Length: 178
Image (cartoon, rainbow, N blue to C red; front, side, top):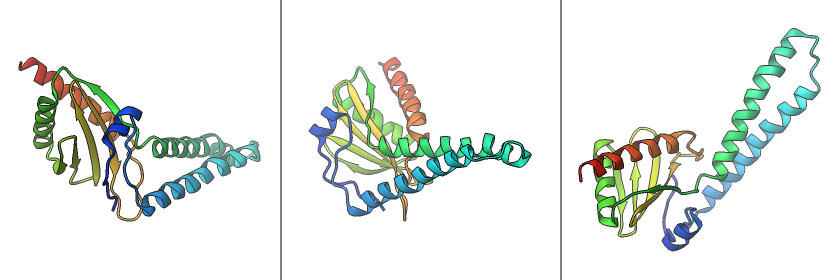
């Protein structure tokens, strides 16, 4: 399991990247993902170059399966590299109201509040083992979503997009209620 501790809020806010104390398991996970999926990018590319397009099965595999494998592996490597990037959501509320809207969002979406400090909020999902870290300031909320696996922590693939859309909707509803 991934432990998120000792978050450097000021540095994270400045760099727009989550800065925290990582243990060696997280570093090994990242290296393992880069090696395995880097190999899944390189090998199919070489196999496409050496494919005999006169044979129908090789042509089919070379033009469908290999490019799909390369694309998905590239996306996974990209998401691993940008997993700690903080997504910015501009609001019109102060820090207290932003926190209150996040807590209502957590209740509405059945998220578990793992940690609620003065500067950040960590929420966990029950089903997908995803941790969402929010850094709350006046007029801005920064967040990222990370997977909490038992053995290896794959990056979230689309959760951050869906979460951003749901949060925008939640903040829009809150601004209408003013």
